[in-house]
Length: 383
Image (cartoon, rainbow, N blue to C red; front, top):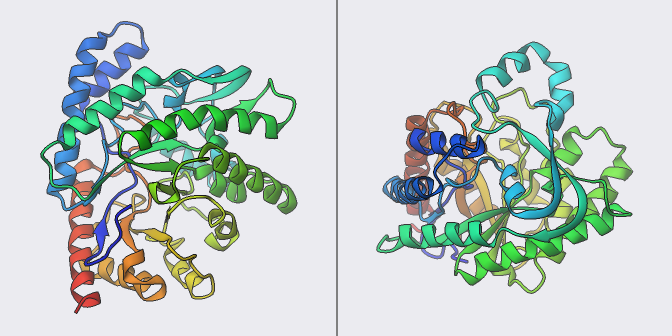
């Protein structure tokens, strides 16, 4: 994994808006009336276009924009055997927020997040032995990303995949431990294939943060479940070098009050147990920007890297490059400039949707600010 050895490197979290033509074809395939060959051709072009835009807007560590995925975790319906899909309530992930601000969320769900999604939100219920079946789709994604990066000047390439904690609920195995470990063993196939392709693996796990934020479970149960999440993920990562893995967690809500977000201090002890070389987290929005102070008392283990968000997906305001630079410099002074990559709080289109909350033109302006802020910070940090 590349480090910021002579300047601050820039990256993002993964998901980016899909073009309308791809969304239309994706929806048609889900409805059973699409043409797979046409979809594959349009998808290939969408990945190439997305990657070239990332490079043009100053990102060093890039990916495919998750163009092939209908949703952050919904894609796993095509990758794992042993599950049935069940309808999911839009509010189920963060019920306390919805209960506190029902009027806001009533209109929010209509216009954003799920309002323009090409696929309904679902949850997975495990009803049989878990096994990996996504080799064909994963091979397509790997090939598209390799082709898109051929001839491009990029520092590094990553590919996101979901954490075991994000794969549905158990209605088959005798215990949660048995269930999560079975999921971990299945996901290891995807993780290893990403590494074998020469990419950095990013494990997406908002579920650890959501556990402490919105589950409503007593503290001891949250802690017990968090330990299980970590153990399952480390099992899935078994044999994969830490310096080929970056871990991302966030809070699963884009634009909203966010008053129930757990502080990073509740999570950091579990995060640092994960066998990853880098840790990505929200640090740019108003609920979490102050949390850089945590690293004044928590020591970053030797050899690890922080990937804080320095621009946010939760607002359409484009951050000033000087503010971005200031955010980067805070972390560089605390953990060392070489141990910081500049990123976003989360992805900008975790669902394949016609209505991304932040307009794509604004999103690219945020990436411009990210790149310029990293340049300014680098000038000062390597003065």
